Length: 613
Image 1 (cartoon, rainbow, N blue to C red):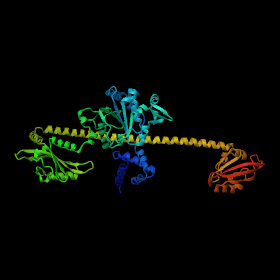
Image 2: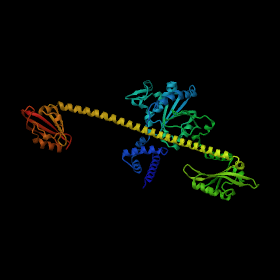
Image 3: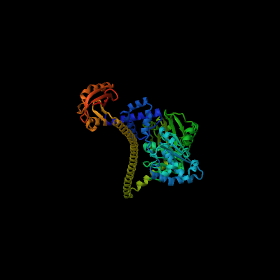
């Protein structure tokens, strides 16, 4: 298998896993960029010890709790209060006053924070408007909707409780004014918190919140591919009122929506809905579309066909005529009751051009087929010209229902073109030099157009690269936060160990008798002060040494059997008395007892005391 084949197989396995996740948990990740999505999934797979997507899918099927861990890895919840302060300052000083003035005294202001994560962004918006309107007026006029697909993050957002570290970027006066101490944490003030409503919402699939004055969606679009971004922006455009503002992240921008959005401030990624009639007509009403009856849709289709100036025929997949508009009936003398007739039986199927082959081609290639300047001679000797478009009618699931055949009358245009051609031929000699110059200008124009297209492509590539960099930055930030948390836990555990070690050393030092701790290999691990005073050897001199090789006033070889049996069996040995000599050379009888450290083979503790001199 070549490297290319391996990559293709890997992509198919990833798509299969994404389909499984959507079917099992209702999370649709198919619109996410495959580069960052695959990287995040593989990070989780490495954590649980899997290399292949099918193996990880089997693991998900048998471990339901793993879904939450996977979602936490994919959905990078990096957020904070007043993230990117310059952009929020622009929103506070320019956009918010404009929205308040537009709403008027007592007027409602609706705000949507899409991809709100754990709620910091939504509560930041509440603070902005409370600072402008006052807290009391803000609780009456402003309603904020915070949405996300991550249920765990939404639970944190609804609680509205944050650590001191999360509030470190807030000025002290805002922290005091809008947060109440709650143990070691801080809770957002209740009166404003009741005006922030959190709920689960998938911006790629669910109907948008309507009549919104300000829509904030920062550093979320960059995770989606171009097609998904276009659908999301279309939903956002529907959600916003005329003149409403869209606030995006610093790595996001609207490259191809000049007809619907105008740039308010590109540096801070603030855009405004165009209020023109053309822009309003581009909106779609999801709620109306969802509730529309089939008969109404049929009437709209028929009226639209009837109103079309071009001749249009709808032909089902089996070749039966489904619908013919008035222009087609008038142009080709077709009956009003033609629906249900086999298309092959009609003269129009082969005159003025063989349409059946074009229809078969459109079905086979699943794309529109166009033939220009088709000549048709009418019975009175008049000549007509048509551009004919055969377009397959494909459902969202890819099912081929039939074709629409459109006849665009280009008679006048074609005649004009022919007349112009004759004039051009007559004047060819006289305008040869002009044509040469025109050709040169066309070449320059093409070069300029090519340069513009290259620049646009480069701009889009830079934008994509910028989004990838921002995604990587957020992943690194998330990893840094995890490392900081682990470091804090290690510091706490180290402190606890130091405290335990100090306590143990104090206990051992306070014991007057000699206490020696040997490990499983009977090497000295602890030598207390009593042992130093008794034998005259410091702890640093004997640490790590074989106890039975030490030369001091105790005959250790006579204790070897007792010590080894105690270490092997894990049972306490009876005290043994033996002659010994202390550090000053005075003989005495030493009592030595041996106890296991914890269990068999884990080491022993020796207690050495003077009995009599």
